Length: 350
Image 1 (tube, rainbow, N blue to C red):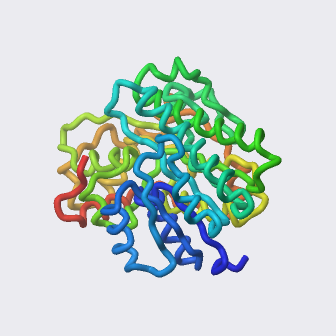
Image 2 (tube, rainbow, N blue to C red):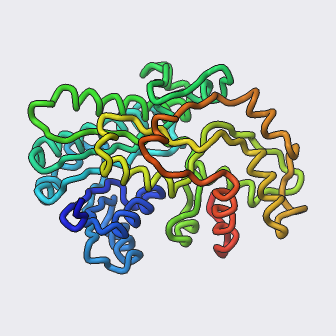
């Protein structure tokens, strides 16, 4: 594949995962068109990438708006061969779950696929959508030790039942957005040429591509680690559990998803292993002398037994075989994440 001849569109290019993807695409020689919500954000990204001539940015103010991506694809669609749709609403400070989480996620996915169909049906050959393990299981099932998640598993919540709380609604939004994509593909085979793959990562940890991004706030998964890094000695913490993956592996998976034709039509479920917050606390106390005695300890060594009781099981062997590269382990991931947080003046914004 001659990467110099291929232009990749990355939606939500200013985000945690997407910045790593943009970096890896540019490093591999691809031309990249990214989208961000404002000119200010876009200019900031261009500056961070040293005004790389292979990177340009377009504005998509609101991915949930009708025809949100039409302008971009009407203007640039003939250049684009690959679309990586990473943008999706991730916030929990809402009480109108349908309006603020479910509908934006579904509409964002539909609108980018409709824009491709209208303006780039003959040029776009590969589409990769960033979904989530949340599309496989709701928050209760993620902690169900009798459940085995695979590439074929779907979150069992309905549109109505997922609106029990913000986290369940977020999980539901990933399910319904992904299902909308597969349905679109099925219904439009005669008028499009692209293949579809999805990336379904677990909790995503790992360092920011640009350390100063920590000053602007961090994603919800990284917030779990930040709160532990900045905890007090006797502080109690919620013991999160479930599948985890390093952001650098999520990024690499996006490239493999369109470069390897065997990934077409597949859900790629990204998890290196199961984790819990207690294991992260243990690593922080073991690896960082400057934190030992100053942050929480919880119940050292109790992580494995906790996971036995309070985490689903996982079989993503099909995904690992398709991707063909080794994921970062949990210790290295947490050490790299925390090291960066400690290096940045003022720490993370939580």
